Length: 369
Ligand code: ADP
Image (cartoon, rainbow, N blue to C red):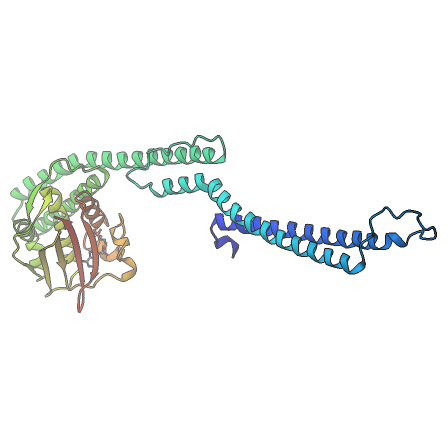
């Protein structure tokens, strides 16, 4: 229970408890010893009282009721002093704890500010030479190691993707040439077609890997009109949509967003392709864009199987697939939405998914305008 309370309050409570026990013990002890003293003073005049003094110069010993009264006043004063010391001590401890714990609070807020973007940025060391400084040094070291290993991983995927790109392009070119000369035999044609599809799938995976492992700086942005872009993508995907007898509907719009058309095309292509891939035959996929105050809202809606609520965040993580065998069957790698999210972050846009009614999903992107 105590572990759930903030450190500052915990520290104050423990110090106050310690103060309470010490003060109450001290007050009890002083009261007991005061009672003994008063008893001794009351008894003193009767001790060895046979000789009568010639001159009574000593002050008269207090009478018993007066002793009682003094004792009572003493008791009251000690109780009031105890309560005051505990109260003042607790308040002082609260402020002292705040002062002592401030470096920990500062360190904690600095750690909270760390994300993938500023992982390698070291936290400024405090002036003190205490445990907080040591903790900051250790944290900076850990983050530097983590950043290094991230960079190595990124470099590895980028290099692997680059190395695979050239032989793939050569294979695709050779296959194209081969298909021109071998068109009579239906079996050969089917084989060439299957190989070509697999090569295309591999190329897309490599492009996604490259896109994911690069920094994608947006150094040049321009207004990108959405309607022509949507039409081009729908045209590219018309073969797949016709195969599944899915109708792609694009609502006319004059909206545009600021960005890089090549990257934005990749985002809408991935979303539209997913919508077609994960929908059953004879359904409809709709692509629309709406201008709102301060933003442009793009929606890709399908009437497919939908995405369970538990996975609506995870699908944007790399290599996450709701149903691995289903995704593999449609040729998915699990990188498409992660790439979309990365590109959209560069455009300061937000992507989310919600259920469509009565079935399917709506992927929604909000661009600042
Ligand atoms: P993949 O290459 O596997 O399609 P994505 O990153 O594009 O990878 O998508 C991740 C997962 O999200 C997919 O495997 C699929 O399970 C799910 N998904 C994406 N889009 C849709 C959609 N329109 N309808 C249903 N499920 C989807």
